[in-house]
Image (tube, rainbow, N blue to C red):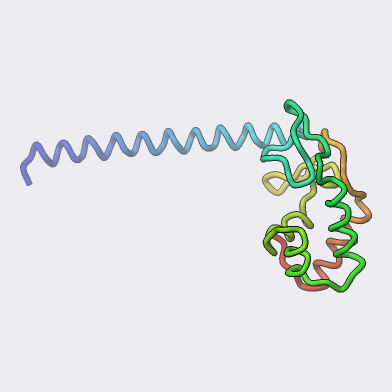
Length: 143
């Protein structure tokens, strides 16, 4: 390989290293912004099933009553996640995510931290906690 080609490759390598470092810094900056937003009680993702955005505010949406029905049905009946998922049109993992989503009790979970949300809860903390206990008792891993 000619000396000029080697020098060119080294130069390109250094440029790529700088770009990669810049992307890492951007990603960290974005994450810090999301942590700040969550700590203020704001959702950092799309609206969960049962909620909708009105402007920038998260509010109960058209499926909000079905959310409570789903939680109640899982808690009170001996029914598999597969049957529930088919009934509500979600995957089993989708149902697991819904059943373990703190948003439904007015909280925001991000980066393994739980914050008081600025939005209205759809279900009670009691119902949510009973469902968490049942998931744990059944050995169902949360996502």
